[in-house]
Image (cartoon, rainbow, N blue to C red; front, side, top):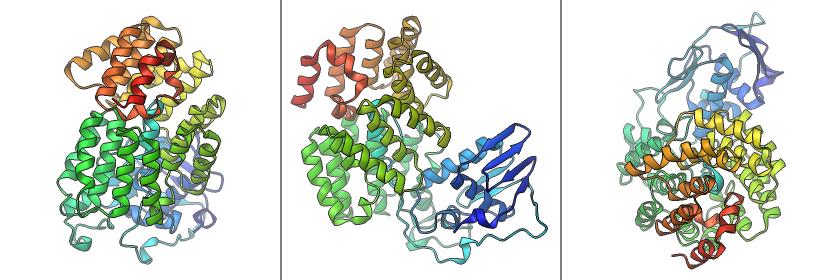
Length: 481
């Protein structure tokens, strides 16, 4: 439904909210919200402090369109950012675990009798709303792989109150686990993925949907650089043989193994085609075929296909991000820069977009802008994943060798005490001029089965490394050793 047509201007605390223009005016100046974000705020305003569940908000704003939890979390984050709010010490928007969200400040509408917004509470809920599975995150080519394998949620409806009986005989603890947003909040971190993996492992026997979530989580986290590829592949292969896993999901899992572990796009395409033909619900927002098309060199078709999916589905950082990475891979740097800057506005907490913006600026020889973006990333909280290494690479390639060397030393010291992506370290070594170590790190990445490697031949980030020793790097890729 069109919430905007039913709402007049209103005051939320010290802010004047003008839904039809998307404008907020308050003590910190003027802010703008894109239409869907504003609709979420309008819906919460009409609830007048009563908690609204995630399902109710999605039903009211998007109707029957499937929207995953991470997309709604991003919208809530944008509302908080515009209002200068803090999720840990909220003044305007409060998160109620297992219940949803509510506004804390009083709402005063400009008309004496505010128009009522139809509540989704009067509508029947679908017991199993499938949510988008294409997700978020990572620098260079790993980011696109992550966006293809962010865990997709298919949870039963969350109880609105503690007294409600969990649906389908599933325990309340399992419902909490299946709503992965409890673990993967506004920022993508390796710590969040480790917690999620531990939680999913505990419920795979009770709830079959957790099997596929755990498969996708392993792929996403290994691409992020949270743990080695070999470790993830072993668990994915075991889960893919589980008798409770549906055939279509098993096909997607095998496609992922064929592409990222075996580096065999043709085999991956075969698995994926059969899986999608047998399950139309998996096909509606599936971006893996576009990636495979890009690997074959047909970037024009890949970008067009990804663009159609992005335009035809609700805003989602992973989908937007994948389109941007395909633009980057196809060397359309000005378009990639424009796209990632738009992503910064839509998803301000999504650090992988900043990483790709820095790389795109670097490749377009806009060195000062690239350095400024890298500085912003290095000052942000460390997510513990591989894209946190991108600032050092940008420093070195943009001429700030001393700064790059200091950055590289910190990460090399860190690698002595914990696992750090050798492919990320290879980029750092090359950026500071140590090409021998860079190639050693690259060989180590092949031995560990890094999922990043499947795109080595098409990712512009690795152009200079390929120029160093094309036979050493690419012959290893072709051999699959």
